[in-house]
Every structure is written in structure tokens, then in C-alpha cells.
Image (cartoon, rainbow, N blue to C red; front, side, top):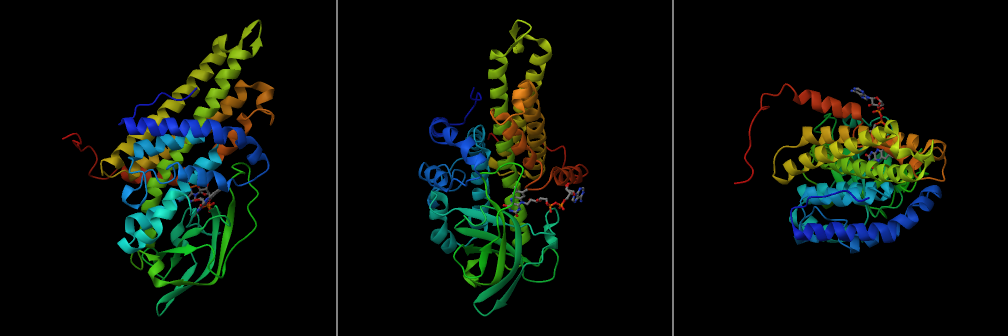
Length: 391
Ligand SMILES: Cc1cc2nc3c(=O)[nH]c(=O)nc-3n(C[C@H](O)[C@H](O)[C@H](O)COP(=O)(O)OP(=O)(O)OC[C@H]3O[C@@H](n4cnc5c(N)ncnc54)[C@H](O)[C@@H]3O)c2cc1C
């Protein structure tokens, strides 16, 4: 049962219709098999790119969809109802384009963005390192300048699309200053010295490849640095503000998908002479699941609308990521419960949804890190202001 949506324009409504149709025709029939065979569906990204769904929140001037975040996130949610690996991939691709779109020079944007937004080139975002996840400023990968180029050495852990991407947005240390000593580079996959380790063997999200990228004497021309030298960590963190909204939307869609399966099953399965949905004890579990999905969606879209109005949204993005991913974990666990013993088997999709929900609480800042961001904002003097956006 698709979610009921309110969209700002007819064009946005058409985009959601298009997404729903692609999801049911192209994604739904393939998701379970690709996940169980741990196969990365590279062709799906080309299909989404050609349909205009890979660059939705980016400017039309560079081949993007020119859509507000509010619309982009709802399209992402629709994808996640059937296939989280693909929805996460779209979100990570958008994350990998963000630095270039927001901090790149006009020349850099014109050269690379159209192919990135059109789906010809798939992106990856390399911030984490084996010993530096929650604390990225502890990174050790180095970029040493020599004339008109840099030479990079180190390892970037957990790279989504590692080994499949066409370009890597890589954060590396250009000086010893903890936070202002990091710079951002856009590195094509075929650059000598850049290699992917064997993919991680994960609990879920198995259709999405995650691998450590090794950099050994990787020579990157200086014109491939994004932003100023030393600006890399702030580019990485502002990319993550938007990325967290993407993950919140994916978690909401995933939870919606699990709820839909549970409701359908509860209408068909009978115990004590009636469908289990007619037992109040079970119906209330479903009611709580529906409330959790709606509150995840509302929190995510409220943060997106702040972003769309050009207002600060860092704290709200963390709140959305926290609420939506914790809710997704709860909803998917309850969906397994609703299906009873069958829910615990691989014959039904809800156990997969539950395994996929877990990682949403971990990547793009664990939910402990989101709580750090939220709690720090509680004592800021700017709280309590009123902003008018409609005039
Ligand atoms: C499937 C997957 C895909 C990923 N994709 C990418 C990607 O594409 N690009 C990328 O750069 N990274 C990616 N990551 C990395 C991810 O962002 C990190 O795993 C995450 O930020 C946590 O870092 P860590 O694993 O090193 O855990 P740690 O930082 O070692 O944390 C361990 C535990 O300690 C807690 N903790 C740490 N510090 C604090 C604190 N100050 N207060 C309270 N608790 C704390 C954490 O919440 C966690 O529970 C991916 C990870 C996974 C699993």
C-alpha cells in the first residue's frame, strides 16, 4: 500500500508516479534474488539515471532535476520500500556529488557534474578509515603536494560502491592540523594505485558492495581538488547533513515496506477462527508500526523543508536520522513478530528488512553521534526564534 503523499507541484507528483512505476516494474521483481546472491545491480543505476532519478536535488543547469529535497526524499523513500541497497546507493551517489556541486569551481562542475547526475558515472564517498569512523578528524590518509599534483597514500574503509564506482570523493590529510588539515579530491576509478579490497561480508544490505579502498602513490592533478586546501572536513560534514536526510528517507521507506507486508499478512493469516488483524493485541502492534512510520516521515520532511528554505538544518537532520532509523529498527522487528515463525524464514522478505534496518543506525554517523549533535544544540542561544518563510 503506497504512502499517502502531499507534494508541492504537479511535476513532483509525476516524478513520484514515475518512481513508483519503475519500482514495481524494474526493482521489485529483482530485489530478493540480487540480495541473496550478493550481486551489485550496476545497471539499475543507469536506468534510474536515464529516468532522471539520480540527480533530483541538483540544478537543472548541470543535468539535475532541480527538485526540492522534500520531493527527492519522497522518491528515495519509494525506492526503499522494495530495495534498500538501491535507495542507499542513490543517496550515497548524491552525497558523492555534493562536494563538487556546492564547492567546486564552475569549470569543475561543467566538466564532471552532467555525467555524474545522468547516471553515466557512479560515485562513492570516502571519509571513514579503519581506525577513524565516528571521529573522521583522526584520519591518516595523506595527500602530499608536489608541483601541479598531489600524491595520496592510505586506506579508506567501508566505501559503499567500492570497486564499482566510476569516481571517488576522497578526504585526505594535507597538513597535521586536526580539522583544517583535510582536503577533498575527486578521483576517477581508473587512476593508477587506487584499488578495492575484497568486499565486506555483511549482515544485510548485501546487494550493496562495501569495500576498503587502498591508495598507493595515487597521483591526482591539483585541479581535481574540490574547494580550498584544508576545507575537506567541512565539505565532508556539510555533505553529511544532506546525506543523513537521505538515510532518514531510506529508513522511512524500508519501514513502510515492512509495515505493508505485515498488514497484508495479518489480513490473510487466521488463528482462533479469524484473521490475526482482528485480534486487538496484534492490531495494536500494527497501529504502533504505522504511527512510527508516519512520525519518521514527518520528522524527515520537516527537516527537508528547512533545507529547501535555505535555513540551518544540521540538528534537524540528525533528529530525522535518529528518529527514522530507530523507528525502522523497531518496525521491522515487529514485522517479523507479526508474521510469527514465517517471519523468521527467508521465504518472506521481512527478515531481510530487519537486517537492513540495523545498518541505518550505524552509517553516516551512528545514532550515538546524532545524539551528540542534537544535545550540543540544546544550549545554543539561537533557540526559540520564529522565521517566516512564506513571504
Ligand atoms: C554498510 C556500511 C556502509 C558504509 N558506507 C560508508 C561510505 O560509503 N563512506 C564512508 O566514509 N563510510 C561509510 N561507512 C562507515 C560508517 O560511517 C562508520 O562505520 C560509522 O561512522 C561508525 O564508525 P566505526 O564503524 O569506526 O565505529 P566507531 O567510531 O569505532 O564506534 C564504535 C561505537 O562507539 C560509539 N561511539 C563512538 N564515539 C562515541 C562518542 N563520542 N560518544 C558515544 N558513543 C560513541 C559508536 O556509536 C559505536 O557504537 C559505512 C559503514 C557500513 C557498515
